[in-house]
Length: 249
Ligand SMILES: NC(=O)c1ccc[n+]([C@@H]2O[C@H](COP(=O)([O-])OP(=O)(O)OC[C@H]3O[C@@H](n4cnc5c(N)ncnc54)[C@H](OP(=O)(O)O)[C@@H]3O)[C@@H](O)[C@H]2O)c1
Image 1: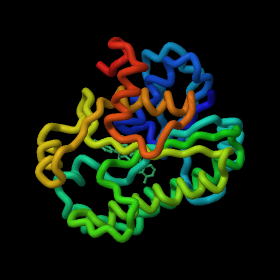
Image 2: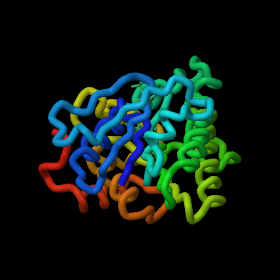
Image 3: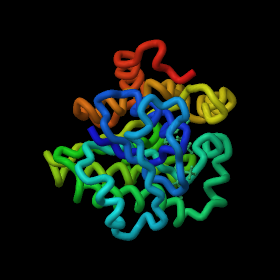
Image 4: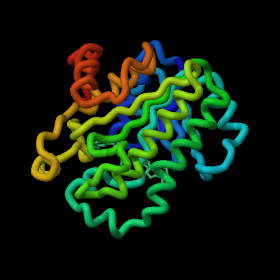
């Protein structure tokens, strides 16, 4: 399998790459990034990793990128232009940011990429978009917090699922909607944020970053089973396919 990872320099994307490098079913990993990235130093087979630094995310893909992703079987998409963890505790941040730019990164980049990838990918091409439990697809639903952002990302979910439906069975898509993401390291969701989410939105399901990554890779490999993929399902699949020693330490 050839896997494209977008957002590979981030918290979840890094774990997707780490696991993909160990997975013998994945012959090739292409990370599309905005800055150069090396595979982890302890990677067993770093030769199957390629990083492409994309400067313009809205123009037609350069020929060199098309060649690199030709015949890809799946993409795991994690890009976001906001720090989810800050966003969760300081909703006022969303009022200070350049929302047009955030929309460009979260929505326009995603849909443009999906169209560009499908043009050169294998059939079926599986696309997993990582969103969040708070993102709302129903544009008529009133949201007391972060409404503009949550609706915008909901529109992205709707648009990519519509695209996949029109292109079925050649394109399969789903949206992973984790709540809080647990894991080691500085980018793990700290407990203070969990508590803040808990207070505002009630019970917040959690999934370990290793289970999330493993579940998405499993869906890329064996087929997408449902949409959306909520935390509980991601956790269940992840626990089933991971061994204790596979978890991020
Ligand atoms: N972390 C959580 O607790 C949590 C919880 C629920 C849902 N999620 C969702 O999970 C997904 C991944 O989250 P994460 O925590 O892994 O995010 P992250 O660590 O902040 O990583 C975000 C990724 O997006 C890239 N990116 C940011 N701005 C960009 C831009 N303008 N152009 C191109 N790439 C850009 C970053 O690249 P650079 O390295 O170049 O900045 C990075 O690779 C997101 O969709 C998020 O909403 C996260």
